[in-house]
Image 1: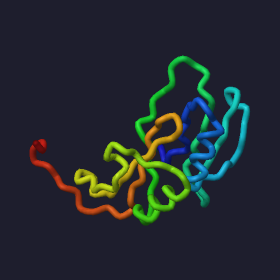
Image 2: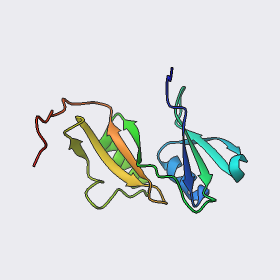
Image 3: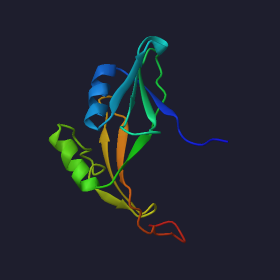
Image 4: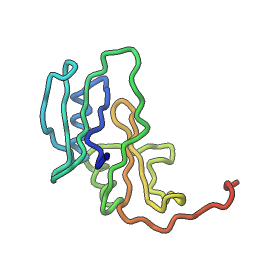
Length: 136
């Protein structure tokens, strides 16, 4: 039986720039290994946190990660703190804090230095709108 996500492995072009990016999100370096050449494992403070493993891409094709969603207790405050730290949120409307009507969650999106999408989600879930037919 699967009980939780253990880690998310992300192949990146520049490990150091991604370490700095995730540090601004509050992650800490947990360990550095020689796994597949160079690997940094990062996690949020606290017990039983999911590990983000960053490895330098060495192959022609990188696996795709759609997004990683990070829960926050106050999405507006968190977004402002991250902007103050120098991070930029998506400029195409995805960076705005919006209610996802299908999930009932407030979300906002930013990108890693290689363009992977990081999504902030508010821990409070509102009642989702259940569509009886596809919206037009």
